[in-house]
Length: 187
Image 1 (cartoon, rainbow, N blue to C red):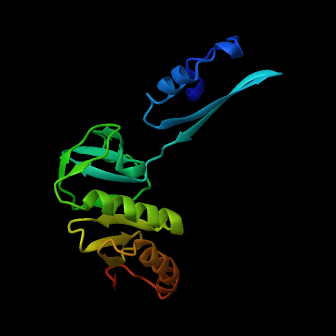
Image 2: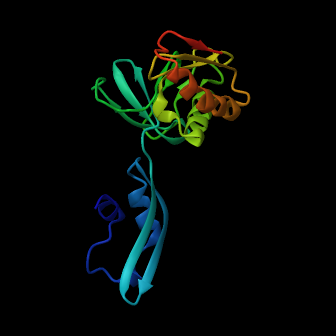
Image 3: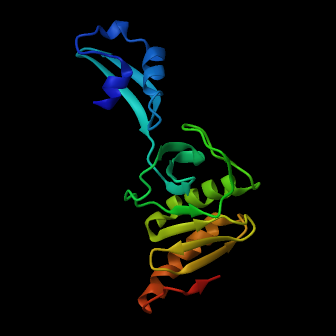
């Protein structure tokens, strides 16, 4: 329903009158949606609109606001309700210079933005995003994670993040099988 609403297409419009650029512009006004393409079928008469739906990948508290962060570190939404339940890792230790909805966050420490995106991509690739409660980017040379169980994971710098997270994926279940990991450190 939202895609149809933002596309500007109405039931009964002619397939020939669908303007792909107008559809794209309308859909891209919603920061949670990204236009991919439109396809017209003449018999039976129909229009297929393809979009990418952006979902929050991380969250951070900043100046009394909760920021929901999407792909490539783009701010999807700021909200003053900092206690809303969003099950994504929380980013801590950042120095933020500028925040604008629909834009990447500008950080005061070089490498922090790249580190967040790199860690989130590696977590998604390995399927362990749900295991991580916190991403600490205070120092891009000493990145750290905290699992939902309280285990601190020291990643070091952002070199070989995919390999480091792959190792975490393999080791974490073994460590958790030993019992309470809260307060433990995996380096």
